[in-house]
Amino acid sequence: MQGVFPIPVWRKRLLAGIIVGLAAGAAVLFCFDPARYPIYPVCPFHRLTGLDCPGCGTLRAMHQLAHGNLAAAWRLNPLAVALLPAGCWLGLRELVWQVFGKKWPGVVTRPFFGWALAVIAVVFGIVRNLPGFHS
Image (cartoon, rainbow, N blue to C red; front, side):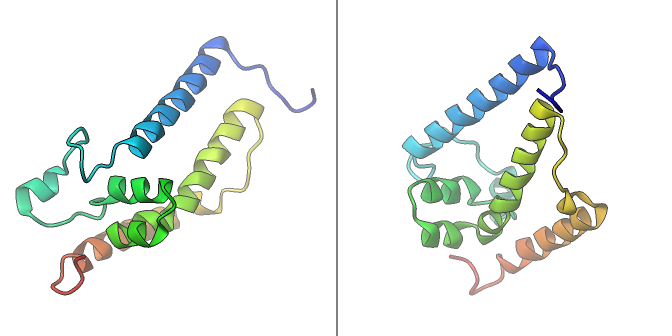
């Protein structure tokens, strides 16, 4: 097959392990609601300060998304829900590169986007803790 490079056995096993791990994690998240089961990690920032960090609510939001409830997911963490398509694109892009050796376009991998995301996360973290903005 043209364009495909041979993949070492260790890399195949690593990719398979990552995919199986992600699938297992998604299955656990689908079956066990983070709002009801204390098996998930607790945010250390929230525990120390009582404030929500930019990532607080992400597990609960992904659980709601897995069950098709976009509105509830958006209320729990709109930043995580908004960034999910870009995250899926980047993950799929990396998988295709590792398996087939083909690079897909990487517009959001430029340094500007990393800095912009950092600024957005900080602003989101501040705004979500203002009175009247917390759900």
